[in-house]
Picture 1: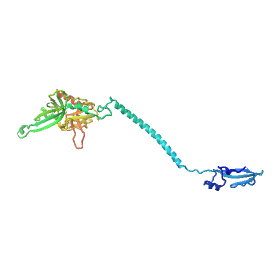
Picture 2: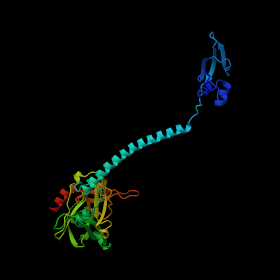
Picture 3: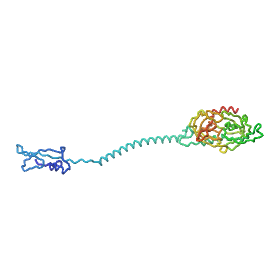
Length: 354
């Protein structure tokens, strides 16, 4: 049998040192192969780690050790890095796709709702009665209510009384406030403290010239009809017809947070017809006005100033829900105005007009 181990690429050496020189490592039992073969050529002389034995038939038996070629296993860091990179990209793509799909679905739903509300003219805001998606516009409410809110001016002359009348001089002054038209034939409601000097029962020894200034510029003389000092409500009248009365609402159903506007004459007739906007801050407030404690008042953050007294507090439907009457003025205090609920004022007004 020929020795063709050297021709076999898998078993090309039987020498330990040669194996180390070729492959750079020491052979081990994992790549060690023991072979036994016979030959009849007496001139054959195997080399390396071989042992020759002659059997009883005269054949030479060779025991030799061969080593299988084993290439060094080197770490393929680049391949591992690429595999990790590809795995990360795949995971990111999957997660990103899921998130994109989720957010896209939510955005589509929101856009659909907005589009539906924008196209539905029957959907109105519970606050101001306007369509969703639009900026609150109170100009229509103002146009409707403004002609029903008037300015009131009192020119007052206080005459000295008793023995002092010979040594004292007359005192003169002017008071200005606001009022709300109740009827076409000239009845107007205001605060009692605005027109108290015109009350004959007040015994002020004052001569009063009272005027009503309409929004269109008309000025008319007014007379005192009646007043309730404790509730700060009074009724006056002008001899005019075809006035535009205000629509009186229901103040018993008000809720904190509802939008309201005020119309009146802050600081006097110079700013007649001033409109401010705010919300109902609270209901059923008790406030000491200096002339006693007033109860069940509406609190609002809409700007109220001197001269607004007697003016209108109006809801988002254009209904008068209160008569502005007071504000708290102190350093560091803002947005504390108060109005008499119109539902409380109605029976008093009706009693005064009889």
